[in-house]
Image 1: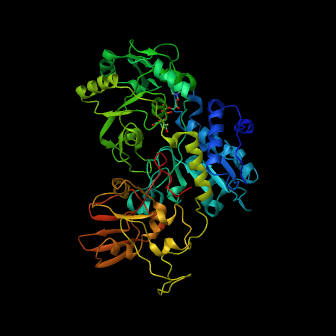
Image 2: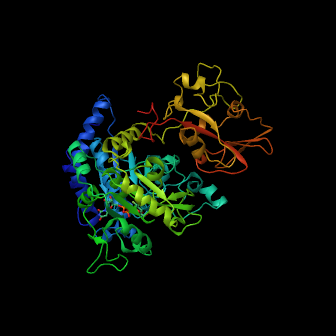
Length: 566
Ligand code: U2F
């Protein structure tokens, strides 16, 4: 049984020393320890102390290993990316606080030791059973495990979870499909289950949303923030000088109204990209940045970095986040930064999560090329008052709840009961046989969800079948019905009865590897079923098809979980 633990002493010892990245993570773990502990108490109460299996978990942080080049650690104090370290620190803390049996590796030597592969055996496969129930790693770590576990990786891969900042879509993950249809990238085509990839924001329901946390405020802090806010104080998002390049025009407009602060790393002199009227504090420790944000009214992004943690921290500290809209949206198809990433997700602004899940009054997303719109936004921001806001899914309790639910319920190892429950000659398997009816827009597959034959998670009772419009993805189709697409439920709608339920008349029925299937093509009245479950994908659209979509409900503030998912 896993028991919540609030003492972080052993965790800190395990994280190790010798790298700036590890020190950054340890400082963060220490600073947030009390917040995690009280969240753990609340979640424990909420779960009514119900039994949780203790898992043996290996965390192998590939990008911090010397063998992967570790380009991040030397830049920790120099304005380099910290988002990944924020996330790994929080993942480690969540797993530790949930009471699992944790081992942490940041080198190949440690990885070998934990996996029981003798040193110097090169790519000798791990022969015995895997000594872990779960392995959290990243793309670098996956590659290292492939090299050093050889063939046995295939055998054990259902235990792996890949922390993947921007996400991986099924079409890119499927080796054969990616190769045949132009979806191959350097990151690989690992044939994992889409939900084994875990992202930093709920970018796509095809992956699991892992996330991280931001600091929470108590009542006194909230009051103090309201009292001490400086209405004309802005902080610029961008700790590296290059992020300020070419932004003089906006800075000048902003400066007409506000005093501008920055936290840009510099060695000896003010970087030339940062105008003299900006008060630059230099790169601040996280805690001091929080203090600055507590005073500021506005946190302003100029387009880079994409999808980082800082805007959530700013909003949590009562700032309004002003950011540029990207029109056309950026993606791996049209933009250098995303090129080669295994997703074609369209990024509609610097921070689509802030735009779509939070929005006004906390987030203003405007066209920065339109000076009037930009100017008007600043004036409006100065007129309004906002309260600090943090979505539940980014609180410690929210992250613990979600990670707990994944650990206890996601299972990519056990074989699934066949669906529909008939054999190849149409005879019913299992008992009791009975009619099964598919109802569009309402819940369910009546038969299947009334018997406990299917132990799916999310539960089958959450399923709502919808058809997308032509040219619309299932991500969008479910969204416009106030629901979310749930790839784990695709297998229940990949049947010809689903077309009938939606009033599609199939002249022909084909079974094909196509990441848009199941789908209906009006032109030929053709119904297409998905041949390979690995290609079930919420993302993807084509003007030719109306897709069949398995949607589900979700908890307000915790989009990863359906109402009955806990
Ligand atoms: C994102 O990486 P970044 O590290 O650039 O993301 P940010 O949002 O800038 O912030 C990361 C953390 O840096 C901290 C701040 C955030 O938690 O508290 N920080 C700080 O400690 N001191 C300062 O003066 C300023 C900020 C994203 F997370 C990555 O996944 C992407 O690779 C990257 C590129 O898009 O952007």
